[in-house]
Image (tube, rainbow, N blue to C red):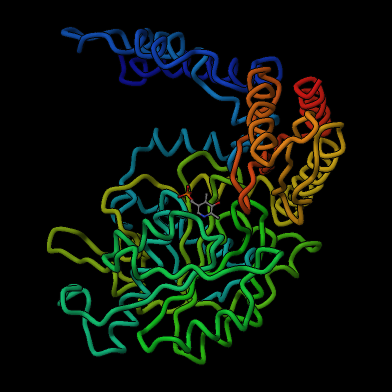
Length: 468
Ligand SMILES: *Cc1c(COP(=O)(O)O)cnc(C)c1O
């Protein structure tokens, strides 16, 4: 038996199960139907003493996972901010596992290193970022924050006469982190991991549209002399708000601050002629993050970090040892990434961008925004519902009102959670809840390439039934 014959049965089973999973998405419930104890009872067998035939392992896996796989790869999933997978990106991801290269350095996987280099350049073009910026492909925006803010740490401390990589942070000059109140929690986690401490973060209030006002930022920067990192939002997690970059970044510059932009999904607005204006001035920042696994629809996990100051970026991560081999002129991923061994994360992005092209990315963004608008306004106009935030891009909020006379805000909160739970239990659509400006709301996010008018209709019908 050749070695390919040994792979064949398991891979063929995987393809067959995958195709079945994808083709039954329309009919299958979008929520989980197997509970925790059921899943544990199926998987938590004693550590096997003896091996199992590979194809049987795959069949058992699929059998035991039944009911525990959310329909997040399909068109009726509107929870959190979660994309699906494009066909080319999914197939490319399978190949990455098949090739099984270590994406640490060019010498370990020459083709994948070049693919990543090209994909990084394409992303900078789509986002309108400086072509000279450096980049890293990481697991998601969480690690992209860490990567970008490590570069910020390097430069700000260096300017204060401190070498953070050599001397560490004990005794180092303090660095402040100014964010808006709408920041994602991953910003704080990055700040914790980098050793600044959560107390370094000051959350500044936003205006009614969720944007940081220039006066607010200027005042905060004036109220302190320590080096500062300013974290701005390109699409916040609840309403997709964009900070006014063209006004804020020059202010931050005056104070010598490093400006970092959390554009986990919102940076994709740059690809759409109708929404590009929201990002005006964003290219003036020092660093930016984005996720491929959200709006570009690559499989998990895939995020991007971009840094204008390539020297600061490289100084934070550069690592050369005697046993690694370097190829002159090649791009070694380890010079820019926090990881050592890693998968060839650029390949699914390359495939996704090839599948869509510039026009396809623009169409995807436009379509998701239009569907999000329809979904929020149609559910919000049902009896017993109200629109809390009409989508500007792909994010909106709806609230459900208690029908009882004299109902309090708490009653509306409870009704909102109850209706979300009923919609989810129907298996027809999946939404999450959030507390926004003190009130419970249903969050609506669309970033799946497959979401179509039928899916929106089904979700509205499910909301109508849950209210009735
Ligand atoms: C999803 C998200 C993050 C975190 O990204 P991960 O890919 O989950 O690490 C950060 N910020 C915003 C605005 C997000 O939507």
